[in-house]
Length: 365
Image 1 (cartoon, rainbow, N blue to C red):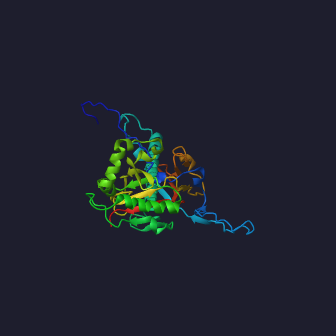
Image 2: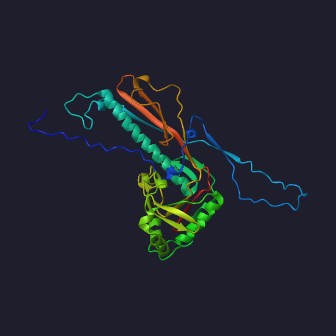
Image 3: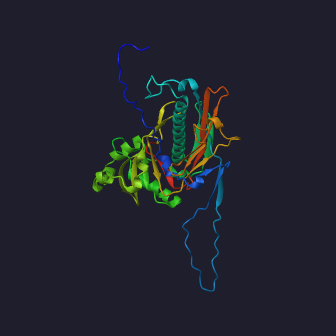
């Protein structure tokens, strides 16, 4: 029933959902070959070393024999992300945000809207799951994905070189009085360049590492000499990377010029339930942007296509190389027609194909 008061219904405020294109996973590429139906993915690898040609003693000596590098093959079985949600017909009969409470509800239209909202939530969750993969890969070259009970659901060791994951010999002090960020970064960057054959281009800082980096007198002098405000300008090659990270300067350390990023985005850790940053506070990631890293997506197999009665609510598969994402969807209606269940997921795996083109520095022992 209504009372004698009057009310004006304003337009509803519905915050637009923008799927996260998260920062660390943006260093992994997506191509048309990234999408597949296979059980596992394989890649042939052949590393090159900077050997030089050695002359022979004379034209009569004959050619010097060399042994060509034939390469290796690696195969990876991707983890399965598969999430499900149910829409109750009763909920579609209730007033939705922005609707006039005196209009009859449109059950099907409300169900379609709710289905796409739920699909968006699932997509964001899977994207963040892939960002966790990128975080773990750049941190130690391994994956260990766990559930809410702290059970290890998926593990893989990409077998990185231990020399690419280092800890400083002297802590970077909070007041800048101890530690040598320039020497520490240059030392690890030299290892990355030697092993990965690519110039390091990006430094990604955790919160503590950035604060201590900027307190160091030598680092501050370099920024001040080159003009910090000018260094902060976003250039064409930074767009995309800069969506969810802060570019706070460019700096030359040793032989390499770096973009300096501060990345403080976070996810809810399923084990602790606490907000957790993708980049550990006292870490600095050193990355060669041109190093090849692959983002792959496998379809989730089904014996039969989704329920034809429910196909109006969702597409069966959503794949986009430009959007760097892929989802296999399924949807069905209970026999009584009162519950609509949908699932969406992918077999997503990030692969550090050029394994030696990044490193991680811990600035506190």
